[in-house]
Length: 294
Image 1: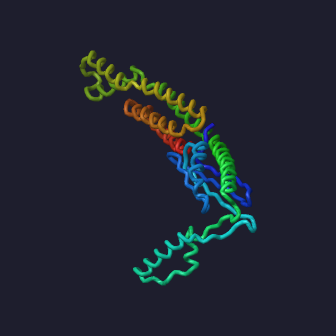
Image 2: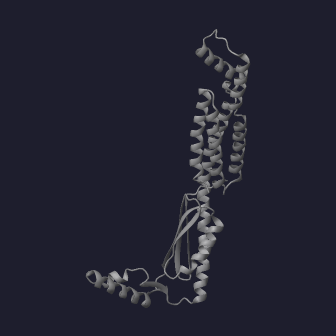
Image 3: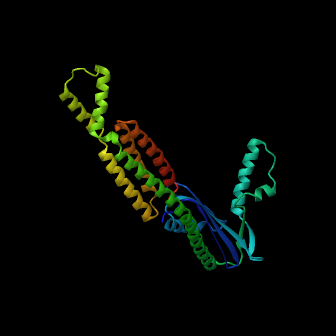
């Protein structure tokens, strides 16, 4: 089943005196890009979080946020002395150079990292156990995100299959177009000659036959039709295979467009040109849908 690149996932938990909630939001992207918002003190989880996300997802821009809530009495506010010293030194330099008014204590404490929240009783073993719980909860949030993306992907599959069916119908219409026959080409060429030389003009019939054969060869779109049918079969197989196939489908739409352009350039009749132009519109609609698929 195909998966959309957009979706939402959430998972909650509670352990070791801490409650938490993971929130994941995903949108379209050329590759997998995970952006994290972790609470102070949990930055070391970043590598493990990215590794787990890469195992569950293959494509899309994902915003992962971890919100923590300490149980009553379990959290303590810690002043980061090193951070505070650096901030104060920077403020002194800025105020001396710009002659700005002195910063208040509230302004300084609002700077991220100056004040940190931690569990005063949690040792390294408990911290590691909490992080393992958080990663297990993240896996559940990623599964929820994938479920959400799969539901939207099912709708996308139906839309894309409908567009592929339209391309197949237009390919069949091009193949059955009466303008492709040698007789039709000869009739059009004869009509043009009659308009130029007059209906009773004396002309070389052998040369006419040669020109008809040459024009028929240039106007032959059999190879383009064969390749279009092959691309149609490949697209259906990719959709049936399921994600991740978004990039492959994007490349395939480029091949669809290339064959359609050649078909239009070889067209020798308005009807065939109109079929090709209509096909280009459908191919562009298919490409837009492919950009949403993981």
